[in-house]
Length: 311
Ligand SMILES: [Zn+2]
Image (cartoon, rainbow, N blue to C red):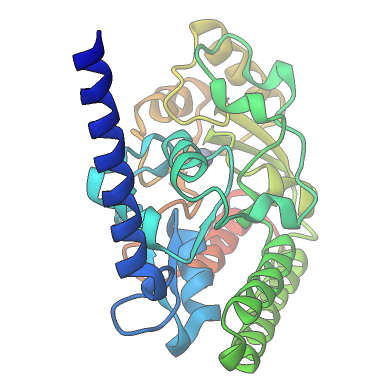
């Protein structure tokens, strides 16, 4: 008994000592990258794009999701988790990537910026939109996390991020605010183009692989029918597929939308059954192969105009 108590005390003392020594040596470097600029970690592509625009030359931005990787099921490497301990700010959206939500909670709780808190999110897709699907634990957050697909909300996020960085790094505050304003202006222009381009269309129904486009639909008065719910990996049941096919026929849908990072198989089967074609609508969850967030959204506008016969 006595021996193990002593051993335990020794281990505890050793651990404490190591901890304080580490804390002391890295004290001044916390939250900044090797070159001394504030370190910002962005959980997924649209947030990385925004952080790079707003951070400009004053911040170092690291993305957690590599190009071409579907972000919802991202798993973090031990190195990435360790990186969160040292970063100054983690920009993420609670509810998109469970692994990121957990890592921020455990390793960067005081430095997380959940951008969903800076806008009014839309409620999660209605129950009838995703029944028959299994394991959709993302919906537990109660709201739809795909908020970057509304450029107007995303402009608000840009402004809030600029304020956050200006507070964290007061010496460069004006730069962050200026770039945030320029980014918000670009997003407002995009919003106006989408609004104008989707005003007069002969259809408003968009059948999508997963229900990522709720914000786009809400903002531009379209009706989204998601084959899967908010999680692209949830397999739609035969009953759900039959229901979507029925609605698609009623709405005289000419195009079933697929995504770049989700297998188009289900959408193709559905298109065949309905007598429609398929086209790619990019939820911009990952870096577009050519271009950036803005160009991908403009491509989406052209795709929607063709599919919905807009004038
Ligand atoms: Zn998604």
